[in-house]
Image (cartoon, rainbow, N blue to C red; front, side):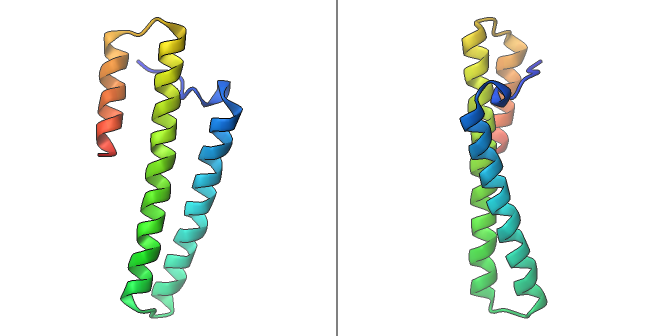
Length: 92
């Protein structure tokens, strides 16, 4: 089973993931405010789309880092590959 995200060994990737998650957090706050303020549906949809993309990109970065970690370690087990594939496809 994949134990590592790979982020602990890659400070730049970790920073990118955290930044994307913070951006998504801010965008989600904007969506909530827009809904509470009865904003036009196009504004709400645009903000939701931005949140979704930010979360997807953060997820792909985590998966990519985990894949790189597995390949670097060189001891990729079949169950690791299956789990990573399942994680990757959950974003598709």
